[in-house]
Length: 275
Length: 275
Image (cartoon, rainbow over all chains, first blue to last red; front, side, top):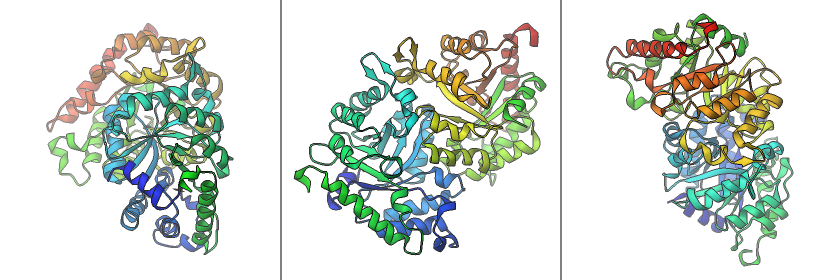
């Protein structure tokens, strides 16, 4: 099943726009999993078991695994997801990008080695960098557009002609890159006006939205500016706010409460049609 | 020893601006190393032994290892370099970039896990993404500026005010990001005029120059436009042109010949002072 089909079904089945970011910092894991032989995987498995009826996506961030040489635990996590919740898509957050021959290797890493349903990529190098990913027509390609961090403005908000740089990314996404209908855009919750502008440029493309919680983004404004006509179109990520909601042996139950609260808060702001 | 000191000494000791890109595609390795227990490492070791008196840097591209789950062979390669030629810096080509907390994990991957002297990074997310790398004051941070691929123009050549986007990257590099004197820029050989413009903006910053050989860049124009006043300032990469110069059991000797020829061709175009 293609990434986009999976995503649409997961939105509907779980009535949720929540994505859980699986960013397990080895130095911050709860005491009760630290002594497991595979502590990162044990942590993730408990989080997945506690939240899989509440979310539309999982998003492991590869840096947290690569920093500690834990590629095996990333693979175990994605395998566990494909076994226990095959209907929930997995976005590998890797922000890859390179010239064609190398990009093909990065695409192979994400889609073949790990079997992720989608991967995040950086648009700075342009189309011939993205093509290696886009040509996997059944997989999703999640392109950075307007990122959530404060200094993202340094390049992304420069004005060329009548538009800012991130708006060119949105335009290319709509007109040039979506030939397999497998494009998503990363748009930070911290810039709700920009979110609205990009939604006007790309009425149908789903957005991956980081930046609520620790980074300060406002859920109501994200929904107001970013949801599609059918009350969907958003994959709203929370990492720290869910996975570190509790630090004791009940961390998974705390994660469940946090994910439920976020799902419900988001749903309160969705269009009538879907509530 | 800091990355920059290492680089300056390697330029001088080997009288070379050549960087060998260690991009070992498992499907293209010479028959004679394919049946080794660690074929990628065996290939790299032979290339290193054959070229280490001819180069100023080695640059493994992590995608070629990650696609095949060969992180161990990347680590073995960098360890082997640090043992056999500790004076030649290693640039890990990874083009990483993310928000601060995640960027810190990527920096840890490159500098702590693998012990690379430098890493390539993507500037699209701005300063707070780069800072996690730049704060490793003894390590190099090689920032994409004007990349060698054809579609790099889509974003990098957009004009904002009086300058193109890649020129903002060059300006930030010179004025904002080089507070530890550990910045390099990636500037493709395929755009020699841009190379000259960036050299004017950044008279001292070393450039990593991909794009000669298979991509069509011209060595004479790269030197004319890119070298610093002392006839250095360039790290000119060749991957396929050197590592696949031969395909038989003599592949390492063929690589040595190709690296020698490239070093000599480059040196013919360097300023008198250094010949």
